[in-house]
Image 1 (tube, one colour):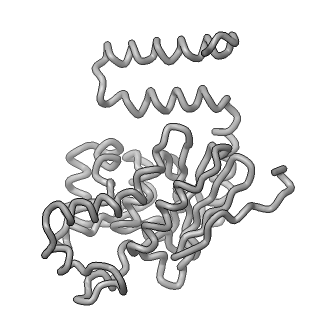
Image 2 (image 1 turned 135 degrees about the horizontal axis):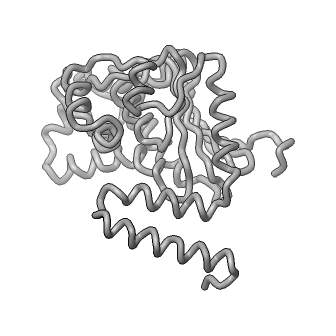
Length: 266
C-alpha cells in the first residue's frame, strides 16, 4: 500500500471501525449521535480490532467521531433489562465469583492490547471522556487532547469502581493521591490540568487535533521499529524493576540492538 492508496477498512461493526494505511491503523468510535457510549458489543469489537491488526502496523490512533470521544458506558446498562443478549448488572451480581471474574476479564480485553510493545497507541481525545471513555483513553500510550476535553471517572459515584484497566495507568500518570481524588470525587479534569499533571502529552485547538496526531504519528515512525519496540519494553517494565535490574535490562536491550545493527543477531 502506498501513501496514495485509500485507507483499507479492516473491520466495521458495533460502533467500531478499523482502517489501515501503511504503518498507521486508526480505530474510530462511530456512534456520535450517542457520544460514542460503550457496551459489551463495542468492547468485543475493540478486542477484535486488536486481533485484526496487520503486522505492518506500528502506530494505532484511537479517535471518536463527533463532539465527544466517549461519554462512557451506555445508560442502558443500568436498567433492569440491560443490553439485549447480555447479562444485566443484576444477572452479573447473581453469578458465581468465577463467572463474574471471567466476564469482567473478557470486557477488559478491549482495553489491554493498546500497550502492546510492538505498537505505539495514541488517543485523540475531544469533548467528553467519561468513565469507560476515560479508561479507554488511558489504555493508550499517548494522549493528544483538544482544548474542550473533559476527563472524569464517575464509577465511584455510581457505587462501582473503575474496572476497565484504568486505575494502573491513572496512578502511573498522576500519582496515587491525585488519582484517588479524581476517582472519589468524579470531578472533571480539563485540558490545562490534564497536560500539567501528565494525562495529556499535548493540548491543541479542536480543529487541529487530527493534524497534531498525524504529526506525532509521523515522528514516531521516523525511528527504526526495533529500536522503538525495545525502548517501549524498557520503559514499560521500569516501574516493576529495581534500579540495578533496570540497568541490567538496558544492557541486555542495547546488546540486542548492537548485534542487530552489526548483522550479528540470531
